[in-house]
Image 1 (tube, helix red, strand yellow):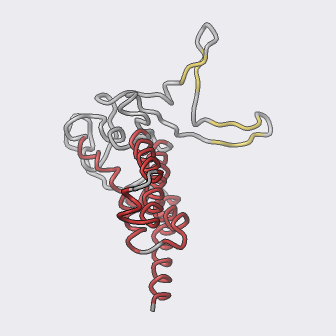
Image 2 (tube, rainbow, N blue to C red; image 1 turned 120 degrees about the vertical axis):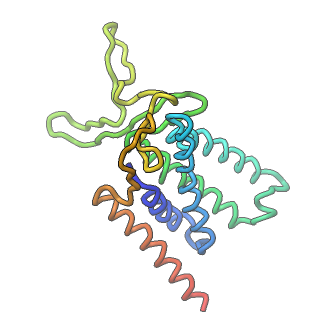
Image 3 (tube, one colour; image 1 turned 45 degrees about the vertical axis):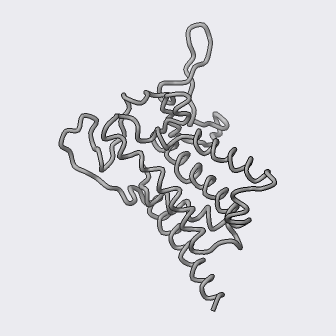
Amino acid sequence: MPSTLVHVALAGLIGTALLADRLDARAILLVMAASALVDLDTFLDLWLIGTHRAVLHNLVWPTLAGLALWWDLRREESYVLERWGARGARVAWVALVAVVFSHVLLDAFFNGVNLFWPLHDRFYDLSGQFLYSDQRGFVQTFVEFDRTPDGTRTLSNATAEGSVGETHYRTGVKPTADGSDAERLFPVAMTGERFVLLLSGYGVVGWRLFEERRRER
């Protein structure tokens, strides 16, 4: 699974692109920190199996936060605009986008997350492939279906998995579901692709901040 460092690196790339001329050290660090905070539910898994990749790894909270932000910005006396101005509003939007794409969806495509918790308690694993075959045409295995005897299509067990309380994802904080002794692994980059993403994300953010500082002199 992607490490927190990889999530933050991708958030840095997203933030650098979307903040554009509003980028400064504080803004990009807030965007990257927002992505990192999603992994705090790792510690809740010490008490209840399945809370990691559920309590904060879902689309419900970002959607509610986005609706609240949209509502506030439409008001005549917007709290966000009055306190932080247009820059603050941009940072808030970019942080929400980064949380969804750099963390929730990235994990959904790496072994799955509880996408709609707490409204619907089910883990969805979107791991798969999208390709073009000269024999089968376009093929995707992100969302798979099974066909029942009466011909109806239902989500495959490979896509829709267990619920909170029965689904455990190994982490360095809690490597086993039953708490038994096991090697504690704290990943940095578990594949070459993720290592490249790590270098790219932090490299781009570092370079942009260097440019901003040089411009201010």
